[in-house]
Image 1 (cartoon, rainbow, N blue to C red):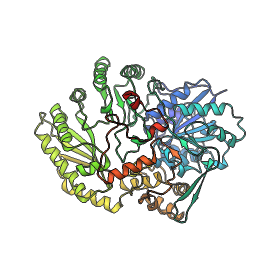
Image 2: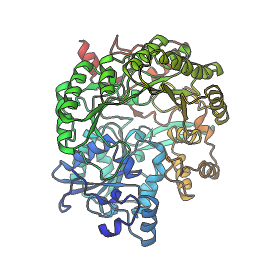
Image 3: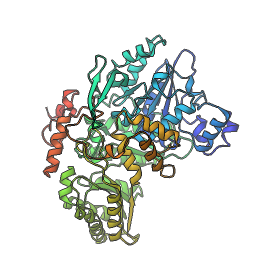
Image 4: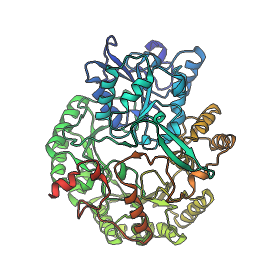
Length: 603
C-alpha cells in the first residue's frame, strides 16, 4: 500500500514501518521471516522480548526479519474487502511471501488473533494442510501450546535467542521440499517442540491417559541464555511513531526470580536467576538513550529490589538522570525491600505514586502463597514512602486464592483502611494521601505450585468484589478489579489440551478475536464454541487431581513436578520456603538441566 492510502486509516503509524531504528533490508538471497505480534502495534511495540529478537534476527547477514501486527478494524475490513493479504511494516510485503512466520505470544487470549492473522495473510490455518511458509510460535504461552497444536508447525520453549539461531541454521540446510524433514531436523534444537512428534491418548473421564512420543525425543527442555551479560541487547531499538503502551527505553536488570510465590508462573519458568553487571547496565542505558531520544528509561525484572548491587545501580541511575535529563523507573519492587535511597531517587523525578504487590491481606494466607512479608514490612514501608513524599500508594491483591475465607477477603478492605490511617500520620505534602487497590482473581497456571487448583466460581468472585466495595468508600480509596469473565476463559485455555483446538477455531468462526480487550471480549461466543464441541470450560477451570497427566508434562521448564507437589503440600500446611539466594538450595530441579548462577556464587 502507498503511504497516501495508509493515512486514511485509524492510527496509520501502525502500518508505516519507517520509524527511527527500524531495519530495511533487501530480500534477495536471504531467509525471510515475518515476525508477528498477534495484537495491536501499540501493545507489540511495548514488548522488550519482541524488540530483542527483531534486532537480533536482522543482525544476521543472511536473514531479513520484518514486523507484522493485528490490524485495527478499519484496516482489517479493507484487507478483506479488497482481497489484500496482511503485509509487513518494513516493505509492505504480504506475510504469505515469507519463508517463516514467527509468532511471539504472551497470552492465550491472543489465540484467535493468530487464526485471524493467518486467514488475513491467506495462509492455510491447519499445519497438516500447509507446506509453506513454516509457522512457529514462541513466548510465555508456548509453555503449554497444546490448544494450538492443529495450527502451528512447531513451538519454541524458552528465551529465544539461541533457539532462533538454531532454527535458522536448520533452515539453511533444508531443501524446502518436505516439511516433515525440516521438522525432524529442527526438533533437534534445544527447546523446539514439534507437536506432530507426539500423540495423546485420552481416558473415559476425558483426561489424558498417555502422552506417546512418536520420535526419539521423550520430552522437550526449554532453552535459556546462560549469561545475559553476553546475550543480545538492542542498543538501537525501534522508536514507535505513535504512542504505545510502554513508550520508553527498557533495560533488563536480570532474568528469573527465586522468591517462590506459589501462584506465579514467571517465577518458575524464567529460572535460573541471571543478573547483568552494573557496568553492562550503564553501557546499555547510555547507548539506548543516545540512539533513541527517549526521556524515560525503565530497569526491568521480576523483582527489581532483589538486584544484588542495588545501591550501585541507583548511583548509576542518578548519574544518568542528571547527565541526560531523563527519568529512571524501577518497577516490580518488594514491600519488604524498599531502600530509602531508591525512594528518594524516584521522588526526585516528580513521581509520587509507588506500587507494591501484597497479594493477600492476612499473614496466614500470605504464608499459603509464600508471600513472605509481614505487617511490620508493610507499615514500615508505608511510613517511609509517605515521609519521602509519595502521595499515592497502589497495592496488588488477589481474591479466590487456595484456602481463602471470607475473613481473608474482608481483611483486604480492613488493611487498606489501616494503611490510609497510618499514612496520614506522616503526610508532609498538601495533596491528599490516597490508597489504590488493584484486585484480580487467582488464576491457576501451568508450571506453578498451584497448577492443580480450581479457578473460583464466577458468582463467588462477584460476591467477594461486592464485599470489598461495600467496606471501602470515600475518595481516598480507588479500587479496580480484573474482568472475571475474561480471566475464566484465560484459565480454561491456559490449562487446555489438544481438544481445545476445535473450540478455538469454532470461536474464531463465530467472530471471537481481540479477546484480551474488554470492548471486544464476548464470553457468550466462547461458551457456544465449547458447547458445540461437547466440552465444558469448567473441566479446565476445576481442580485437577494431582496424579493426573497434565497436557504440558512432556514440556519441561526446568522446575520439577516433584518440587511443585512438595511446595503444594507445604502451602496447605501454611509453611513458607526461603528464597534460595538467601539460604540453601531448595531443590527446585533447575540444576538438573542448567548451571545455577546462585549456587555458583555461593561456592
